[in-house]
Length: 228
Ligand SMILES: Nc1nc2c(ncn2[C@@H]2O[C@H](COP(=O)(O)OP(=O)(O)OP(=O)(O)O)[C@@H](O)[C@H]2O)c(=O)[nH]1
Ligand SMILES: Nc1ncnc2c1ncn2[C@@H]1O[C@H](COP(=O)(O)OP(=O)(O)O)[C@@H](O)[C@H]1O
Figure 1 (cartoon, protein in one colour):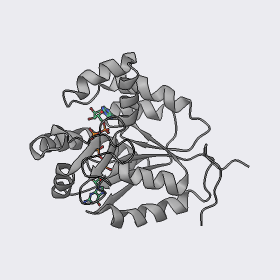
Figure 2: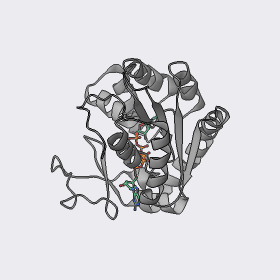
Figure 3: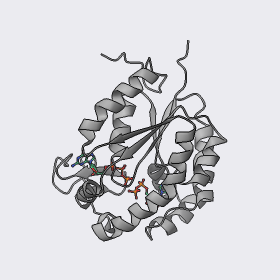
């Protein structure tokens, strides 16, 4: 019998560890990790209409408008009716959350609550491989060769957006737009908030929460490998 499908969203300010934790969840529980940033980069690389439009905003450090995000992401989610997934980076706004609501029922929302000083330290030390979106942190998960992506060997870059001056504005913006989304999920009783300064300390709590919600590893594209 097919395991029940499971749909989750992970929210948090820039640098809160959504990508890092999503990878761990995907590995441990077999959910597909969907990332709004990755979808956007794929569309930009493929020169789709939405990708060309999105690029003009991202290049200026702005959020992509809601109607572009929903036009891009909802059809992809509709294709995933047979999969369990974890979405990272979407929804960001109440309009996006309402659009997602009309497409599927979420089982769980993880919200990461990380102090500003911690975000500032992490992001000022974040290096990115622009083509793939892979992220490194010089202390936490450094690349094998300094300044180079582990898989492609291509140079890593830093975003101006990650520097403290830009970060303050991004965080303020995040707080404003995320608050009604968090309130919505709280009122639905599916919000779980995790606070802390280290991903490795937060992870066991998320892991044990998900273990109570996902009794067996759901169907995946890959071969079914029993967990130890
Ligand atoms: N020092 C430290 N760095 C961490 C920790 N967890 C994640 N990082 C690093 O912090 C940076 C941000 O983590 P991400 O997983 O990219 O965070 P995100 O929430 O997906 O960020 P955005 O894509 O900006 O929304 C990356 O460089 C990570 O390697 C931690 O516990 N300690
Ligand atoms: N849900 C969303 N709504 C609007 N814009 C988004 C959304 N998700 C991603 N973006 C845009 O794509 C960019 C890249 O996203 P992402 O890879 O998550 O990294 P970051 O948030 O660190 O910039 C964002 O800066 C933003 O411009």
